[in-house]
Amino acid sequence: MEVSMKKLTALIITAVLLVMVASTGFAGGGQEEDDVLDITFVTPLIAHPVWDVARAGFEDAAEEMGFRSQYVGPQGIDPAEMVNQIEIAIAQKVDGIIAMPIAPTAMRPAFKKAAEAGIPVVFIGAIDPEAPSLASVGTNEDSIGRMGSEAIIEYFADKGNPPLRAVVMQSTMDASFAIKARDAYLKYMKAGYPDFEMVINEACNSDMMIAMQKYESVFKAYPEINLVIGVCGEAGPAAAKVVKEQNLLDKITVVGIDDVEETLDLIRDGSIWGTVAQNFYKMAHLSSEILVDFIREGKEPEGSGLTDGYGFDSGAMFVTMDNIDTYKEILMK
Image (tube, rainbow, N blue to C red; front, top):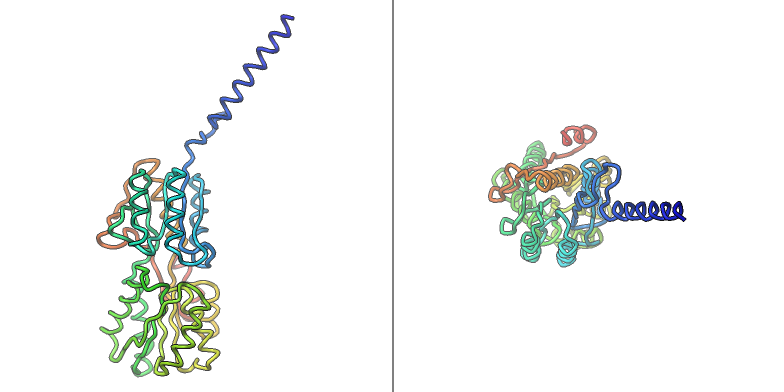
């Protein structure tokens, strides 16, 4: 009987220890479960080639730095759904949020709510100086307009500076990134080119079919158009397809943005002349680093103030057939 009682006592002690281990997430000197950070990335487009690159940067950072990653967002641009996902992350008491303030006015209350809950937010790809954030990481829109304009001006100078009549295609009319990139193009083109005019400004909600439909109508309504300037990822490929269909390759020069595979293929076949390649992988990876360093070590990111634009410019390059096989190595450095 005495032996049985000893065995029973041992079993009870073992069971208690197992319960303690399960509840604390600690065993054998490993990391406590409660110490693992939870970071949510609220993307503007959940299944999009450009943002898929950002997702890779985010998930690689999670593996390298040991945090749990959650990547969420709408299928099409939908600020209301982004706000919903931010509020879900706040309710889940995540440790940090990465998000693009694509519609600042509509999204600002959600960012303020995150700040009130003590959750740091890093802006990616756009900024909102009126919303609280730890830092901002993205491509400087003025640099995009300057870089693209300089390339266009040089290209057409070799062709005798013909009059340029442009259509500018962007994601939405209220997207801060698109507005700033468009305005930068207009500023530098008007300052540096003898005869430039934006004939029409259109938006496609980052939808390829909508973009193509807009181009079909625009090219017919404004036959003088000979230049496409895209400040959303779909702008270049959609224009190239319509230009081909309408046999306008010799008339219309297409300038896009981003370096998704389709855009690069269209540069190679001559349908798109050039594109501004942003470094979305670096945007997401660096955003993650900033959050982790702040949450774990209290490290304030240098240059995180928003008054002068992006605290961290992830960089961009203008890509044509001249550098299409070499630009990625340079850009990643």
